[in-house]
Length: 297
Image 1 (cartoon, rainbow, N blue to C red):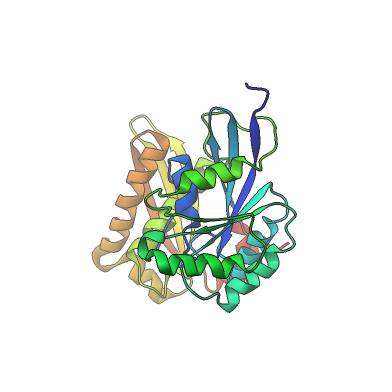
Image 2: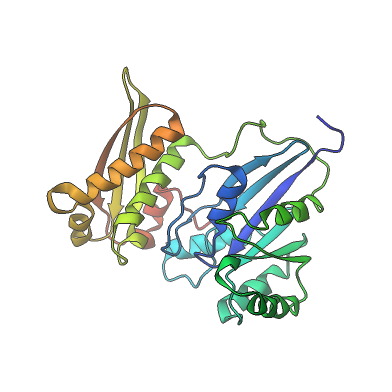
């Protein structure tokens, strides 16, 4: 290993659905954090590891910062804000809008306590024209808190190399924290559960996704296939019927799509056994939240 090896931790923060997970997945070249057009998709801090020839960056993808309405929402916002204070750099991701709304102003205020450098990534630049983009850059420049402002597209990769170079310019010399071929510290069981939730978000109606949780109950290799068992939890009896669908068609679609991604994750053929259960108001039940891996403490 080179003596000038750089390593450190970088937090990605921003409002829901601005592209944090897409950007992180782009850097590591794999889908570590799930992606959906529905907001508040990421619920926990997810770590992805990007190792280069002379560096290692551990990206921390956080839940979107929003005004919480449930105990789950409070957990998500607390998780996101706590990730700001213990890293080597922060990347604040925004969409290319010519005004800063109240929630983004609140995030900017919370970033002012950060001791580490803050970079602004204006994502989805392929959706705006240059004069408008220059105006957006000027608006955020006036806040005075950003070391550098980088317009980019997490989806196409445009200018992501500039963000990477900017981050490397502030990383300290340090050790390789993880093996060079490791791309996440998340256990396979957790990733499998998130894959299933992603596919459920894909196929279900708008009112259901925030009330979904997935618990992987079994992961074991078999003689011919890897056996995975999981339960999708929802909050209402009526939602259970929608998730299953007529003659089980919706659940079959969720299962088929999830199985393909889990097979890529495990590198083996998978038999996925999915069940649906109702846990009423689980997002406001601290006991159930802890059971699903969320804690307010």
